[in-house]
Amino acid sequence: MKILLAADGSKYTKKALAFLVNQDSLSGPDNEVVVLHVQPVIPPRVKGMVGAAAVKSYHEEEAAKVLDPIRKFLDRKGISYKAEWRTGNSSEEILAGAKKAKAHMIVMGTHGHGLLGRAVMGSVAQRVIAQCDIPVLLVK
Image (cartoon, rainbow, N blue to C red; front, side):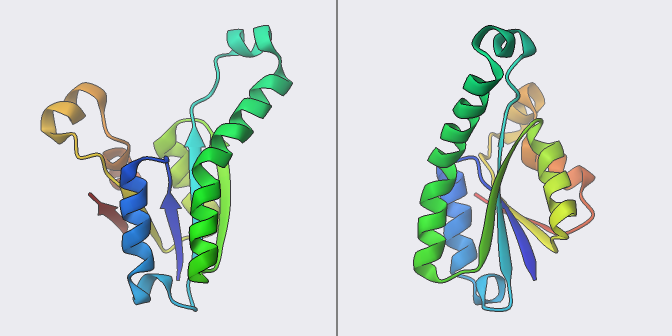
């Protein structure tokens, strides 16, 4: 089974990762994990001011902060994985990443803001669930 782990670097990602690796049915030798980190797009005006190279460098550094600890953890656990990052709308990129990877399931942490929080700011997890055609496992 191929599983996409949506990683934002929060404590909720750590909880989802811990849950994933402790489930033999999800992290066993016949499974592959695709770790995906999504960063917001830098506005064109800012990109024009600082330059494309600086923006690319910034994105690479921020992605490394999130993905490097996950890589080390998965290496120690002997779990097969692929790690990547993208820029864009989080829910859209998670869905596109799952489709590209031909994932059978998405695993992601949820911040659990509650009804009011979702109404005010929305929820990436909620949007992923609403638009996804594969199972989504939320870990709180």
